[in-house]
Length: 310
Image 1 (cartoon, rainbow, N blue to C red):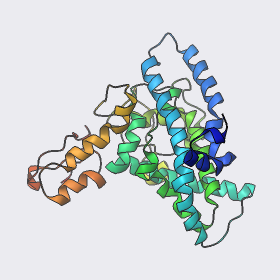
Image 2 (image 1 turned 135 degrees about the vertical axis):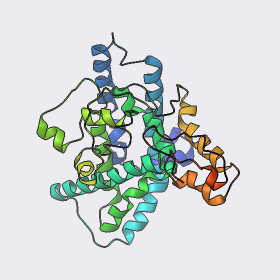
Image 3 (image 1 turned 90 degrees about the horizontal axis):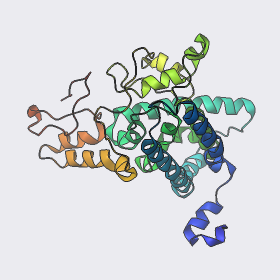
Image 4 (image 1 turned 60 degrees about the horizontal axis):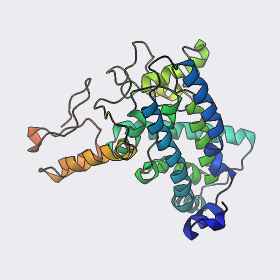
């Protein structure tokens, strides 16, 4: 199949891409090989469930294709507009790319933290956390609606500073590529200096836990230093119970993608003051309206370590 075989609008969008846009998809053979090795290693355990893994891989495959289309059709034009009004121009060299990667890591930390503490962003991010298993296929479990939710907005300031938007998004792709390899139970604790500096499988297993002590911690992508700096780091100690507080118990990729959006809309449509109803959009996922708000309780129960905020 060539571009001329595709529908006109799709062919036009794809013609605007370059190798940086396809970086993550280009890593797919490596991802598949690593999944195969891990599955063989743990085939006689409960670490893999074929229905869960198939759902994760289907979600991941669709996400990568949809994301490329969003990037070229919407995100790059928006970031290019900001770049046209940039403060300065930062040419890419090995040193400036290292600085860009660190800046993307900083932006990723705040995107990831917002995705856990603002329900609008959580509606997209919850897809990644809905698996009750931790293996390399869990890394592939992503929402098709990430770009719609606006995850890319967190990286726009880097274009304003003077970094070419395509290099910004490539650095993000490299960061996400690294994160694939920390979704595993195969690797235990690494040397102390590695655990101090980098986001490791141990740190990320804790991040995926629904245990009260693990919820909303370890937001880093490649590094763990911003978690240490901003007080969101927690070490993996107790055995991790994977998943979310209200488990979905589904492998239907459509429902996994939209279930939290549906719940949020239901909460917003409840009777009560508009300000209280809208807080279900910008408030934290566990927020519930109380009788003091003269409204019904949220359909989303508070997390076990927290109380509903008024």
